[in-house]
Every structure is written in C-alpha cells, then in structure tokens.
Length: 66
Image 1 (cartoon, one colour):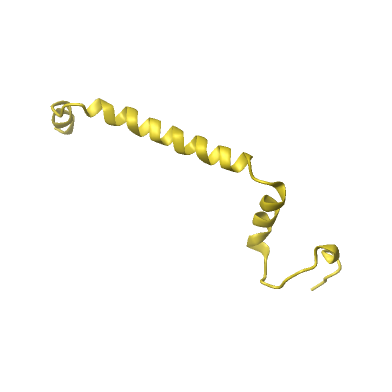
Image 2 (image 1 turned 45 degrees about the vertical axis):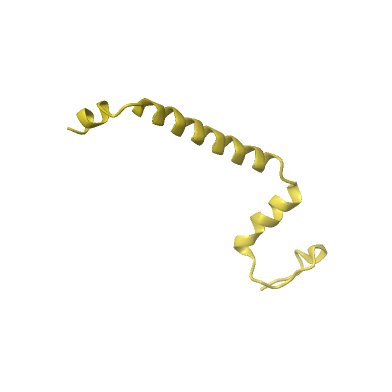
C-alpha cells in the first residue's frame, strides 16, 4: 500500500537525490573541519574526557601521582 501511495506522488524521486546530496555535503564538511584543525586543539579535546577540572602545568604532566 505504501508503495502505491508513494508512486502516485509527483517528484518523489527528487527527495532521494536531495537527501543523499545533503548527507554527502555534511559528511565532507565534517571531514574537512576535522582535517584542518590544529593538532594542539585536537590533543586538548582528546584529554577532555579524562580531565578532572584541576589546572595542570604541562611541564609537570608525569610528576603527579595519586
């Protein structure tokens, strides 16, 4: 039944092409954003899940034992 309903709607094929095009554009934009970021920003973002909220001196990274 759904196939019959969709086949009678004019221009329905255009939605498939537009959705794939939109997906491809967003995917390429996210990929370019990720590739063009600085390594220092990516390293800082990578440490965020393990950050306990205390400021640290990067020169003394290995000296703190808990």
